[in-house]
Length: 139
Image 1: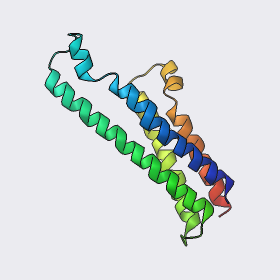
Image 2: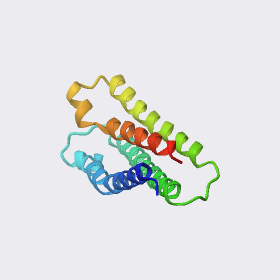
Image 3: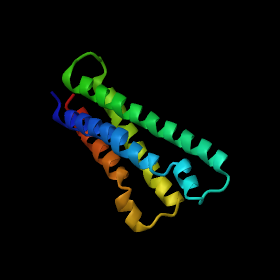
Image 4: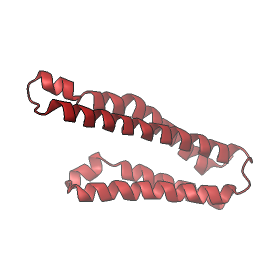
C-alpha cells in the first residue's frame, strides 16, 4: 500500500461525495426558475439553458473525481499497471494543472483575496499533487 496515494484517493472520493451532494444542492438553489418566481430575472429561457449546461458540466467533474479516486486506489493497492510510477507522475501533473486552472480563473475574474480562501479548491489540488508526487517516488 502506498500511503500518500491512498490518502489522495480517499480525499478525492470525499470530494466526489461533497461535489455530488453539497455542490448540487448549492447549484440547485440558484436555479433560474427559482429566481424567476421572485420576478428578478429577465431573458429567462437563455439563462435557464445556460444554467442547465453548467449543472451538466458540474456533474462531469464529479465523474472525473470518481475516476481519479478509483485510479489512485488501483495504483496504491495493485500491480496491474506496468508503468505505475509514470502514471502517478502524470496524475500529480494533472492535479497540479487543475490547481493552476483554478488560480488562473480566480485571477481572470478579478476576485478578492477573501475569495481565494473561500474558493480554496486550489489548495486541495496542489496539496494532492504534492502527495501524489511523493507517493510516486516510492513506486
